[in-house]
Every structure is written in C-alpha cells, then in structure tokens.
Image 1 (tube, rainbow, N blue to C red):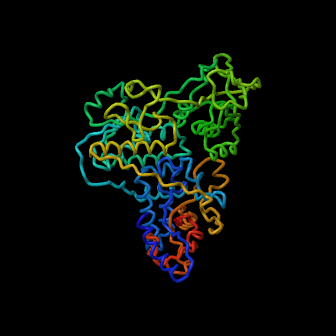
Image 2: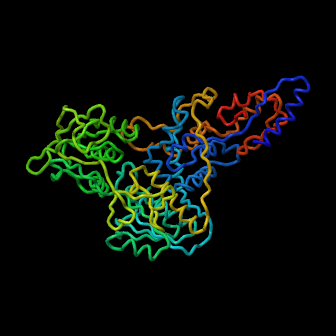
Image 3: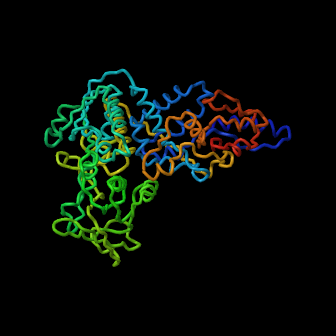
Length: 544
C-alpha cells in the first residue's frame, strides 16, 4: 500500500500544479469471495468453473475441452461431482447473489452434467504428482469422508488401504440414500474411479471386531477414521419396541437392498431432516400415506417444498409422546405440539403444550438423531462423537477423523473433512507448516450492480414434475443450455472481462488483456474520477 501511495503523489502534484482538481483516491483490484464458494462446505470454486465455461469460445476452447477442464477443476476437491450434483442440497445456490433478481444460477445441474460427462468419457482422476511414497495409510470406512481422504492421499503417492465393515463401499451414499435420488451405476462409477488409483479395499472388516485400531496403528503410519454415524439414538417412548417400528437407516437399507417391505397404508415418520425426507419419499413410492412429525424442520427448504408437493404432511413443531400398540404392533402415534418457545426435542416433556393429537399408523419410522459407534475407538470417541481440529487431527498422535462421526452434516462436509485430513497427513510427512491466509471478504448482493445484468431465465431449472418427484433434473446433455446458464454467473467479486472499466475511463487508464488475464491499471494516467469503481458490475474495483 505504501508503494501504491507513492505512485499517487507525483501524479497529484502534477495535476495541482496545472490548476486542475483531482481525487486522492485510486482504483485497486480487490478480489472477494463469492457467496456460492463461502456457502459450500467443501469450498467448490463455483465462480471459476462457471466463468471458465462462459468464456470458452473467447479462450479458444470447444465444448469437449472446456467441460473436461471444468471436470478436472471440480475433482481437485470433490471426486464425486455426479453424486453431489444429484443429492447435495446445493447451499451454493441458496447463497447466490443472483437469487433476488431472476433466480440463482443452477450450479447443481451443471455439476451433475459435468460429472456425468466425466463418467461417459471415462475420465481418470488426476494425480497431484508421480511420486511414490513409502508411508502406508489406513482409512476406516468407505463412506464419502473415507473415500475422499483415500483419494487425496493416493493422488499424492501414498499407499492407502480402506477397511469397510459393510459388504460394499459407499457408506451412507449406498445404504442411506434411495436409488431414485442416486442411481447405483453412477455411485459405482465414481467409487471405482477412486479405487483405480491403486487403493486397496477390504470389505466385511469391522475395526473393533475383525481387527483392532491398535493393530492398524502398528501396521500403518497414520489412520483416518470415517466410520459415519450409524447408531440410532432411541426416543425412549412407550411402545417404541413394537414390531412395526424401525429406524430410518434400517428402512432405507431394506429399500436399497430391494427387499419387500410391508408398510401398510399409513406411515408416520419421526423427524424432518434430510434422512427423514428420504424416508418419506421412499415410503410414498411404496404407496403409503405419509405424515412427518418433528420438533423442528432441519432439511433444506427445497427438499421440504418437494416432499410437500408430493403429498407428505408435516406436523411441526411437534413431538411423539407415545407409540400406541395393539397386539405387539404399532397402530398409531400420540403426539403433542410444542410450545412456541420450544426449539428442539426435549429430554422431558416439560416444554410440550397441552395440545395433543393422534396419528393412525401401520408403520412408524424413527429418522431422528444418530451417533457413531465408539466400540474400538474409545481413545478418540468422547461423549459420543470424535473430536478433531480444523485439519482432522484427533488428540491421539497419528489418528485423524472426519465425516458424520464428528457430527451429522452434508455429503459435501464429509468430502471436505476427508480432504482436509489428507492434506494434514501429507503436510505432516513432508514437514510442511500450514500457511494460514486471511480469508477474503464475502461480497454481498448490495455490492453488485444487479441492474447491469440483463434478466435471463434459468436454463437448467428443474421442471415442476421433476421437482414433485424429488429427483435431479433430467434435461439431457445440452451444451447450449450449460453455456447459457454459466453465463448467468455474475462473477461476484472478480473480473469477468466485461471491459466496463475500459469503456468508461476517459484517461485510458485500463489496458485490455486476453480473456482470463483481466485488466491492467496505469495509475500514472488516473485522475481519480471514480467511474470505474462506480460502474464495475462485479464489485471487483475499489477506491483507496
């Protein structure tokens, strides 16, 4: 900043000597974090990917080339673009600055199509280097966190082995997400691509039963634990042990296993989070009438809207008080509405109002709280959850963890924690200190010139019927639609080569550069007129 001020001084003195007027402020190119990126738990570089696609022709790239580049950009952080493009609640779109104008940019649809492009073209995951390291790493759990960690380590040259307690890899992606939301051939393709990096997978091997954590530590240089949260916390209600009462996980595993399930005509789901939404949708497809009961709704707004359109009734805020049983089977659920001040499911019923109601039920599914199994992991599992720092380190040397066993979250969060743990492990073995950089400020919509951007209808919006069914958009492969949707990105906080600054500057301070290199400022020509900062649509130029 001192050098910058020194550049200003001679220019100001020269202008004042001639009797002219000048502002002491000068333009500075200041990058900001777009809300789509800061809203993503995995920090997916949404803006860069969309601008890359939007400027493909200017950069001399054809569709095939730019989609492959976009795919490679995504998989630097996320090896599951086709998966997350289907099941992520896309908080990037919720945060999008374009939402109040004409709707958020539908990045999840673009991500899904780019992910499918990678599968169709059989693209290989990129290695960070060709180095082969001697360190051996054990990964416990083949869910999204474990697979993400294994991927990031293997591409850095480490020898990785995954130990999975179930018969197939995927964790919650395979056993906790219905097939109508995530097709198994898509999941298998993205998992196989990770394993193709030379990762060893051993299924039907439970740590704490078939092998001990201590043995893994003795045989490996580091261990990552991504076991998830599979233990259902009971409601402790009368009637909970009835024959036709099951957990949401048990129900989804049976559905995903193509087992016949007799649910009857009325289905009560306890809970209103993401898993409960999946249970409700899956039960609707079995022909049942579904009612959800929950103290609070924690699922994403889009998921809640979709399940309601599908005909699911939601009673909230309310809690079950008793499961009514006849001849060993649940026949209904007695519930109570919560007082307006109550926010969470209480340990006792002291916050429950006196307004009660009953729901008839042929089946009751409890899809509420879960926690990890701690057996075999007592050294790092305290209070029901695994304790880690920001880099995935546990209090025990050489042990790392991530995913739902550190707290329930989205698939993007699990992928992020697996990646960050792998980066911590890599730094540890290479003796590299983490460079802590100050985060960029997130740019809000009031800093964007929304009126500068023309109104453009979303090109990849989900249709009403698809939204009702709660499935990802089936728009087919449409290069033109992807390009048009990408061009809706406003490039918040970063130059998009619109050349507005160059066009409005009467002193020719701005030098045009090829697309992607943005612009250059000749401060010696600037008289501080402020037009560039006032007119920059993306909020990239500031006056200092």
